[in-house]
Length: 135
Image (cartoon, rainbow, N blue to C red; front, side, top):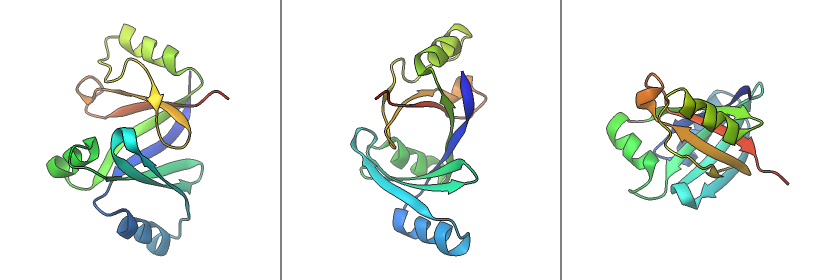
């Protein structure tokens, strides 16, 4: 079951410059950076009232974020919903006719399992389900 909006993914060309904006201009605090090799990105996280902003910088031209930046420029890339049952959420989405990008969750940033739904079947919004990895 979806519990809340977990984060908004924001594609940026330069993580350091973008972090400076969020810290200096908005007064937010970066509470972690991480490289996710499987997605070829570097990330930085900011908390804004319990909803996180995840800045995403590509580390390779083959990164999905690099392709997004080329096509769309910097900006909101995806919305992520926290769930307590990612497999169940994917099953529910598939049963309702939603096209899954990932049928099986994979390890994402911040020690979470993640999977995405295709924006062509979600009214143009790349949608992510995420769940803390079981310990």
